[in-house]
Image (cartoon, rainbow, N blue to C red; front, top):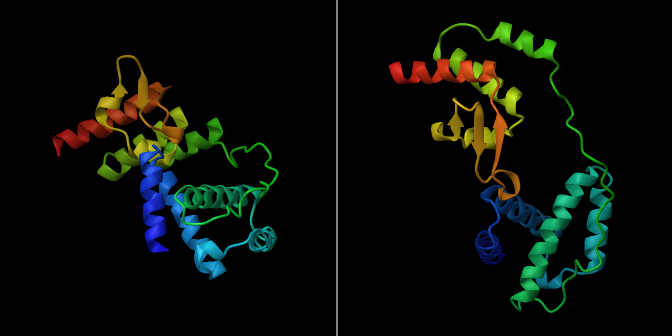
Length: 193
């Protein structure tokens, strides 16, 4: 099983999936195989239906969809490579998904309160302010922000570029004056120390 998921992981990487997606898909497969307790070749449609029926009592439709998608890809891989004769996920339906909305978006007043809390000229204060301002300004995911390089920031145009974001897409976002100022203060502190 470990060998199956390692080869599956390599196949996903060669297909161009991001490291995060590969990790998620393989993690879901390993969880399933551990919980179901049988070899992949012995998994039946009935086992899958029972498994997801049980999970649906306490997991969100979105989480179920991730698990189903991971297993679909895994069993399709096993069938394509001749490791199983039948793909038990064929005909497995996806849960109904509603349009996802962020649970919380900060209002201007809430952001202003955060700004008054993060004061000072220490490394942590400057870094925290820069991170919060960029996230608020751009709507980037934390993973996108952590992957940024200084060269991805164009202060003269007021833009930040993300390369290989969600779905492997490149995009850019507007850098507000507050975010640019916070970033410049943080970068200046880093150069001096």
